[in-house]
Length: 158
Image 1 (cartoon, one colour):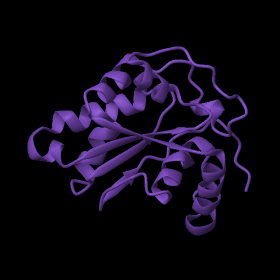
Image 2 (cartoon, rainbow, N blue to C red):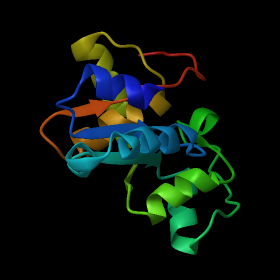
Image 3 (cartoon, rainbow, N blue to C red):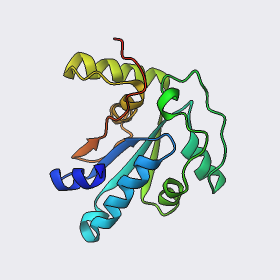
């Protein structure tokens, strides 16, 4: 439903970036974009962002199918994005070319989280800051991106 809401509220949106754990949110957003059809679908990109300590979907794409991975529990976003296996729908969206993947470091995530607070007064957990970190790093293309800041698995401290 998040993907449908974005498309309805932001028709000019050309990129939607979402944080990735197991890939459920990513698969749903990619499905909504695909269902939009035609030229609208062709001009939109979906970007899934993972912390480098939790590369579950990256591992699935490399292997050609979802695989079990050992997640670095010390990653700042592991509590929310530390899935042990990517979902088959998220993997299928990547294989179909409907999704582009990006990866960010813990340092980038913390910096992005702090900047969201300092500049916008948005208090988010590290998982939510992954997409902003990717945008800051130039990994989210487009003129009118939508960054989905989702997650609520950790206490926030500046």
